[in-house]
Image (cartoon, rainbow, N blue to C red):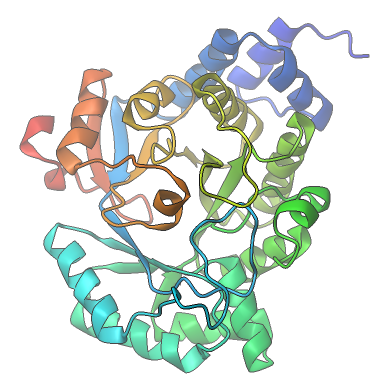
Length: 364
């Protein structure tokens, strides 16, 4: 049993000191919530001492719901040959990109199920069309599961799939599909999905190809608190190696319409996860307030629990929506939440280049 006090651990981490795994578990389980939040906010303000809170204008286009992975926490997918399965045409996807670009979107997330009927050429043609017709947007798309699915269908390595898609215009990889990077958990909630080491391995390959990526964590299904810290530890170790993660995005499982069922996490647990993420991930630059599941008001509180970024506007999204979440926001609402919290909303792009001239008039 460590003799170091919780106050000492909070002070150490607030000043940027690295927590051990055991210290991370102890802080997460035992520290009072507001003390944990205060340490995380202190660290966030030390890293970013201005009043800026960033966000990106983006959209998520769920191009297919056909998926052969069959995760029990997902209400969006349909198995192969299901009557409710769909796959958009390239023209349909481009129409959604056009609409998003008209709203000022600079980041396009094209994500869906792992559809074995789609070959790599389908994605190459699509990404090239997006690049030609909408050169002002960045293709921040596909999940590790989709990359591995393509590699399986094509009989290629995931590295070669990434290299070909990068050549076609894929610029960065989102952190989707991480869930909890612990094998016990994945066997229960996503047995067909890539294993934890595979997820980290594809991320490593993308980053070494020059593609920045984000990392996520879906918490609140069946994992223990210690397993959440184990997930953070895996992200931190890879970041030590590559430095390729731009941000960490924890979000909680929405159970209402999924086969797995269960209970929704509380707002207090959401804030606790944010705070320990900011303190444990001492080498990941940005922490996003993933407001889509807990709502904008909790997203506002997140700005005092370690978050410096509000994520995206998410102009269109179906996966979390189909699980039972009804949260949505306009850019105006997103900026007002930031302003009311005492900060200044600043538009960024995928790579955290600031675009303050793109903020709405309410931010002036």
